[in-house]
Length: 254
Length: 254
DNA sequence: GATTGACCTTGACGTTGCGTAAAGGTGTAT
DNA sequence: ATACACCTTTACGCAACGTCAAGGTCAATC
Image (cartoon, rainbow over all chains, first blue to last red):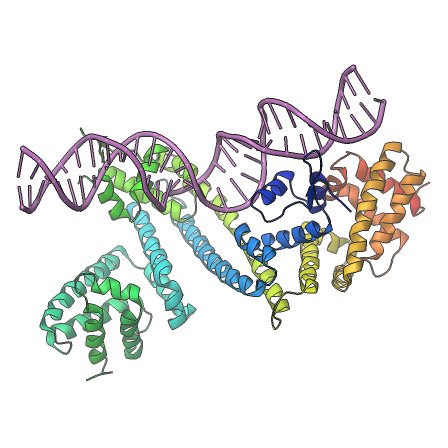
């Protein structure tokens, strides 16, 4: 059975433009071109197209599909697993979006203009989103989904003053830590003050505080280069110093 | 406080390109342009930008945002509610996708490469899913859950040849029906052939065939606009014509 | 006063997966 | 012969910017 472009398009329920595009990007070439330049497709192409459409429906990008259909030994299962991860992330994002929108609707309902408070809500949301984007996956792995969501919820419930307080705390940690770092002693008074401030800061995000979790987080500051980069921005070694201070503070190290 | 483009970009955590783009599309114009042509932003612009980013983070498109930030009396709540609906739909879509990918992964797991058979399994699944998506609810109401599931199970048990046969049959129905339609006579030979092909086609999906059920399905082709659209795609009136042919074929009409 | 380097400008192409003309050749039924 | 459906390539448009490129401006340093 041979098909002209439109026959195949109808068969597959797609447009002729799509088939030409697939030809153009090389994921589905016609079996042959007839004397008038028409694209002629055969059974093999029908099969390939089925595959393409199948993966497309799973939301896989055309360039990945290209790998799958052109490389005969390609590990489709692995590609799918990776793709699955992306989908899960997308869904999480979406869930958050929906929750945010719900909240915003609730907030604006009955009001005519947007108050400053609402603008501020937006910023908190943004803060969460950014944290998610940067560290979400690892933190989730380490602490579990529920904890992360509880933390986010806690942030969303902060009042404006609390928000300002936590921002101020972060500043204090920063400066205290910089001072302490100069002393070089993670067991010293300043370093321990920094560790204590850090604990206070944490209680704004965590439902319950534990020394173990605190120490674990401190270790992550060293293990994860993105955290390290954040703390070491002005003084390399600061992340490690903070970890040591916290380990001492939490009694994990003398 | 006045901001150059980069200052504002840093403050907001976005790129300067984005700010220029927002200027270009008119959703955020600088307060003024200085003598060197630099964009200078003021507090009012900071506030507007906060709003823009807020809505952007909710996934609202920039053109909608434009309405929101430029029209002071704009009903932001309504826009958000509509947007919410879209998000919910997206999530449903995504959930189905993930379920599909999961199934496909489960199928391929434990094997090294994807065999043809497996690819084919996936496609059959897709076929069922599509039918479910399009007609599932109505068909289930009409024929009952068990019948639908029996039908799906039958499809899943098809061999590849059977699948090809049923696909070929669909093609034949299509062309025969088109021919028959031209005669205008649903009792004519061609139309009756189409009805007979349609019966054969049905037996691939139904556990048992009955004239009544066949006639009922034919009626649905006319009653349900999605079926009608499918059959009428090339020739309006085809669905009705097919129904008449089947009613005659099954003896419900002379 | 000249150079450096950070910052600013506009312009324009690239991204994804096609939709949608436009301009022109081909096939076939009447 | 003519109509009409079908085919071809070329190319712009879409969202929201990223990313050069080419060139002007500003503040600090030599």
